[in-house]
Picture (cartoon, rainbow, N blue to C red):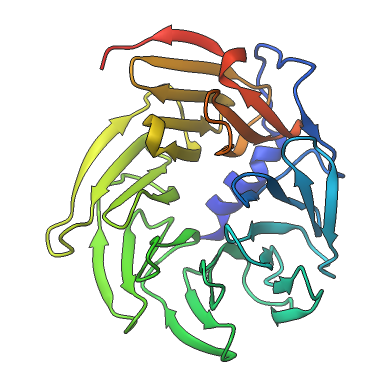
Length: 325
């Protein structure tokens, strides 16, 4: 089970493909490692939290200035990091099974798991900061109540590594996925399995809610599925296939612009919006991407790629082509 996850988390580090050069004047965030696995944007995209080896660095997305650093005490690399849009908590988990929820304001540790367990491969904080949700390399998913300091639910329905966990915007639904190709929906209120979604042919890597009734997923089958969740008893999906993209490693969406960003293991980066698309090829495998939401007129992405660290890439610097709707 862990083998393929290691392939996609760490073989990224040794994959390098020839491609067009990225502009030299683009903003690059100064990290210790040039092999960044995960990051998250928050406060309207003004701040960027980057998992940099065993610690987390906080940058200004506009200037690249290092604003803060979380010294986790981890002995092994951090695999996943999350910070809610607003609030003071940040969560991160490592390859050695360690997990920590840190209060950036008080500098106190709100919750932690010592190393020695299965790798923490996905983590998410609820927007109200009451819950932390995480998944492991053995398929186990846990919901923990930070305020009341107790496990709420533990699910063992997945058969392989967990790759993504998400809360719906209203906080009522949890979506989980991983190497067994299935997406599972759970009720936060009672912990019951609401639905099991089958549509992907291989590992699912990313989940992304668009409102409470729509969910996007992407994975190793080069497909993006759009799930209609308005009726949990009859969930339907539409397929968007990116046949040239290889394993899809990154996914983001701006509803107001109807713009998708998709990235792949082979270093290909694509932005698709109505009538146009933008394409770039980076030298190394792309680990994660995220639109900078404060940019209203220009499409800009934060991109983490193997060997090139974390940088901003603008659609204006990518190859432009018209598309048919």
